[in-house]
Image 1 (cartoon, rainbow over the protein chains, first blue to last red):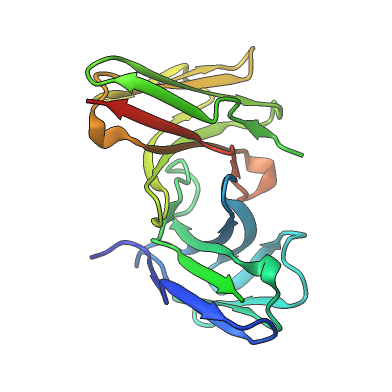
Image 2: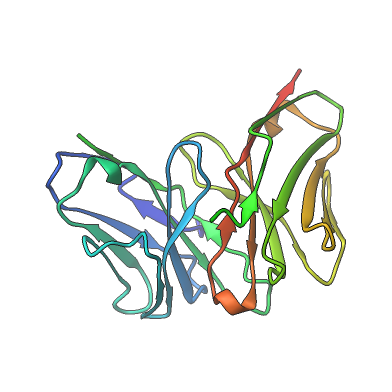
Length: 115
Length: 113
């Protein structure tokens, strides 16, 4: 399977706990994105990496959220002191350099439920 | 600020007929548009895209039409099959945003056998 891989697929956590999600992009893709999706909404942009550099962050990415891509390969998204409003599906996507249309390909997503 | 809008939350179509899903956008700078299909509890799957230099792109049963003057795009599925039942999202991007893709809220398509 050479698609975008995310884990864990599901996470239930108590409010106030920290959670971390991992994303492994398609191997030849140097761009990596994190999106969040809640019920009835489309995916909302959180942040974007080109190789190891985090180049864009959304206003949705509060200071409790941090994303890293230390070696330009896999990425982690950590949410500290989780709140019930953080319950959502967290989607990772990757793409090549723009020029091929920059189509982004999503992983299966990581469901977070904060209780 | 919803820059990409899908005004029909749901659509039902008989198997074998045409499904037409619509999408409107407000930002005239968008130059690349995509359609994704999503099943419950899964990530969106890329279907088809179109650049703003074209007004039509076809891939098998799927055709996307772009009307730049109306800031409107549509996805046609012919013939519709029960396996097409899913939520469809349109998305848009442009060079000046760098790398943000703006998504609509989705249209749930049900193809009735």
